[in-house]
Amino acid sequence: MDRRHEIADFLRIRRAGLTPDKAGVPDDGRTRRVPGLRRDEVARLAGVSTEYYTRLEQGRVGNPSPEVLEALARALHLDDSEREHLTDLLAHSTAPRRGPTSPQRVRAGLHLMLQTLGHVPAFILGRRTDVLASNHLAREVLTDFDALPAPRRTLARYYLLDPAARERVLDWDRIAAETVAVLRLEAGRHPRDKQLADLVGELTLKSPEFSTWWNDHRVLRRTHGAKGYHHPLVGDLHFSYESFQVPADNEQTLCVYNVEPGSESARFLQLLVSWTTPQPPAFPPSEPTAPPASTP
Image 1 (cartoon, rainbow, N blue to C red):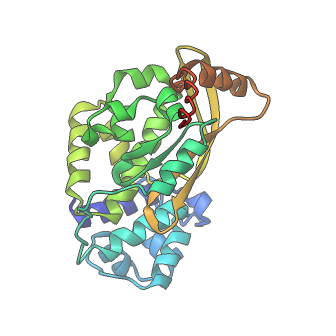
Image 2 (cartoon, helix red, strand yellow):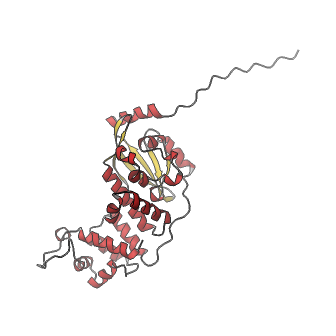
């Protein structure tokens, strides 16, 4: 990515989306030729000069102080994900980090945890929304990631490129757009991740909606929320999901889809478990071992 363009587009879109009334900027009588705030208004709200903010928006200021970043975040009413993204963009504007290249591995204890959570869907996401591991119900409710080639086990590819996802995912537009926002946040953190760049290129070419959402520069760190899926066997399932960073690896996220106890979704999910969980093979009872013959 061109870091200067990324910074300019992000700041321009954020100030364009912030009305003077919401920002607390009084009407000065001048005719507005641009939507939202002007550069000089953002600069005044952040306590910096218009020249400095202009250079900042053009990507010509490297590593501004934490105080300036905080002032900009307040002036533009940025949420936590947007603050993190702006920090990443500005910190890497002059010396971007090399992206991660080593494959991610899920340790044995986490695989065991996924199986322990066998009553609800659960999976572990890595970089680029890669599905690193999943339990049986996650594969039933979403799709069977284990059946895909390893390079294709990506939540973004599933939501945006698999035609079945549009039928399976309730509120598909919202979920797909949020997934693009998650990728945007990661692109700011890892500007030289070639696999991420390849994924963005593939989605740009193959998904009709991707470019519009990508160019919105929306960013999101997924923490909790609501999702729904339609399963062909039991119907609609509504979940409250929670996401947790894996201890000792902040680039892996444990995602757990919970259901309200006693709800219709809980009942349907229990049926799905009983109908689809593989049963252990039945072995015939062992023949009793004959006692050794006594020696005369």
